[in-house]
Image (tube, rainbow, N blue to C red; front, side):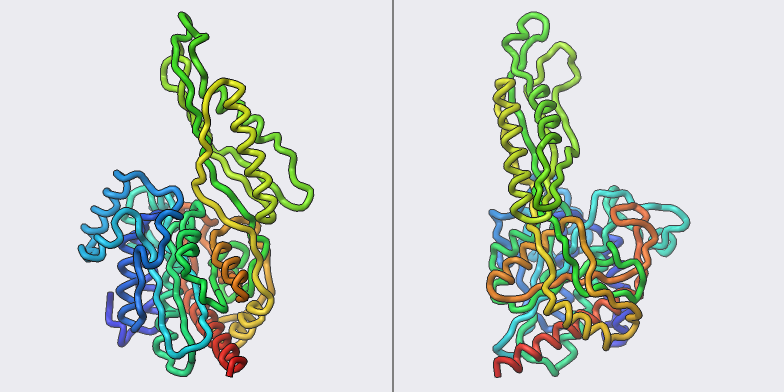
Amino acid sequence: MGDQRTETLSEYMIRVRRDIHRHPETAWTEYRTTALVARELEKWGYQVLLAEEVLDLESRSALPAAGQLELAEMRAREEGVDPELMQRMAGGKTGVVGILKRSEGPVAALRVDMDALEVTESAGPDHRPAQQGFASCHEGICHACGHDVHTAVGLGVARILAEDQSWQGTVKLIFQPGEEGMRGARAMMERGIVDDVHDFFSLHVGIRALETGEIVTGCDGFLATSKLDAVFHGATAHAGICPQEGKSALLAAAASCIGMQGIPRHGDGSSRINIGGISAGGNSRNVVPDYGIVKFETRGGSTEINRYMEAEARRICEGAALMYGVSVEVRNMGSAEGSDSDGELMQVIRAAAERSGGVHKIVEKKSFDACEDVTYFMNRVRSNGGKAAVMMLGSRLAAGHHSGSFDIDEKCMEIGAEVLSRAIRMRLEEETRQKS
């Protein structure tokens, strides 16, 4: 991984980011990334927790099929992941937590996400990763949302805090799997990873902060969401000889789509539903189809509004199944709660940004207006009396999020690491002072 004794912080993060960018991994298959992070944290003197130590296995959502996991594990071994570590992570037990404890007292946490998207990266001449040789080497997968950046910033913060002996208390660095699809945070939250945390920080690059050197001290307007699959089972029959014996899962699935689009919107805030896909039947025109699946999501401006949307959607799916004499199972494939950043921590981030190099624009807050499962951590910390905030890290973008041409200005990473590490130290100092 290079000579860390001579690398500047910026050089270190750029090298790490490009390594992760070249080897992207999707939710619950982040084996190589987890191993890389664990190795780096150990070098910086952190206690490292992995697998069942950081995950409630029953709370993981939408695990890939066993065959997909096996292929990802084989790829990770071929790319040099330690066999003993691979054995611990096998079966989708990715994610890592690093703990650095200097004294009894307050606990601060930083959470970053690590997973990539099923998006094909651009090979165009104007795409810098392709030009400079660090574009994805995994076909059909790339870092198109900046989680490689987040992971590199997290390790930059780890290095800064490890090298600074002046602070007291405990820092937890949480490297989360499976943010895409809202799949990973709840499993870590249910394991109790943030139950002792007083102050919780996170970040996202870009979104609504599109200038390098811009810091948005807090995001609000995180929408709650449920990612759901409605699976209909009917009975096949010959469509000409005995259609009365058939039970069409296709018709039930189609009826559910039309019904769900008609759910009355909620008067207390944003409420949304989207049917992302429907699949039913086979290739035979003369067979009543016995299987159908509808992939959809609900969103709400609050957790309560999203619960309303989900309950109505489930009711309609059950009604469509009853109408056509079939059965239905609605499966939870991922979720997130609603949340906002706390003003108290936003002020700490502002103060840290004012003292950090490279920052030329500080904005108090911007609305996220989308979903992020970081909210599970935020709300758990808050329920225990703590504070939470998510910072937007400004960067010029080559293309929008989730595009195969997505890329960032790597100068933003050093800025992000400096602001967040400073905010963590400032908050620990303040908490320590208050308790002394």
